[in-house]
Image (cartoon, rainbow, N blue to C red; front, side, top):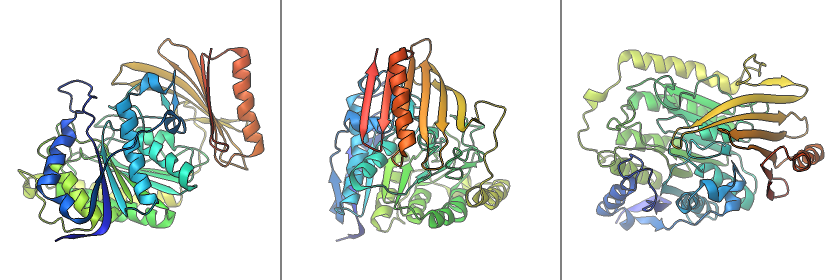
Length: 444
């Protein structure tokens, strides 16, 4: 009988009652074929591998992370809360020591959900990794966390949530944003002025195969993780880099994914994208489970796997090699933030970092405009204020007091909320006070 080197917990939630449409790529079959494959291969017969049911996230779990307007129930379904709860369950299994590692195979996905939420974008509404991470910090104490996002699409939502957090390292390996949604994730995106270098993007050219992905992990990701010394490594395990995926242009294989996981050694993996429902996902998920459990995965082969047909070109290899030479500098010696004339990139004025943004919720067809203000502080990471308006709707205000807030920033945060209530400038106001665990919202 096989025995897992690492005790692994697997959480399933196919979300039978949630789909964008019956034929949309993001639907329940994404996990049903995987579930069948894992049972047929006998993975739960391996000593040390166990299956668990998800928990259900509470509204407060979401409100630690997001400014949801008008409120959480208006934008998120119960399936979203269970998906986030599945990730939280994975965290609890690892943090309590019941399991060494855990893989949350849940949907709906989450890595395109930004700090502010008015609806769904990129199939995502709630950032389930961020909800999980802040659950960990709330329940088990503050942790240094590294998130390695291996979805084919740039994890712009996770990047946005942790843009100003120096204790969270976000690395995204993805298809170049010049060729794929959401059109972001470039090397110059390095984090806010208080967290410079804590965001690192690795945009790879179309048709990158195993060689290129694993080169980027070995030469860029692993040295940075070794330097950052996180308490936890989280893998946002998107699987749409596969050579059969219908909405992307990469040439990664199931073996490549398993090897990548073996190199990363993530404590927790959370499923993100991946839309080759029969030809890729069951094999990738099986390989990831075996890899995380420390069991041999060398026999994993998906249908139509012909490595000579998907091998990347010599030009692609050289391009990625040059990326690997240049990108580590952006973490180890990040260029200082330079105020830009472009308000979308941010300007510093009177001890405030301010950027104006336009966000399009492509799934729901919503346009949002927002102004983000970070009050720069020498004593803490700074108070965050976001003014947001979706389409022609009311103006909304979000204020976040950070977990390390100094008395001045805490006082300023409450004053901004109080002024907003008195002046009635905002239809909805939400306060996130991570220091005192005070989460409040006001509507007028």
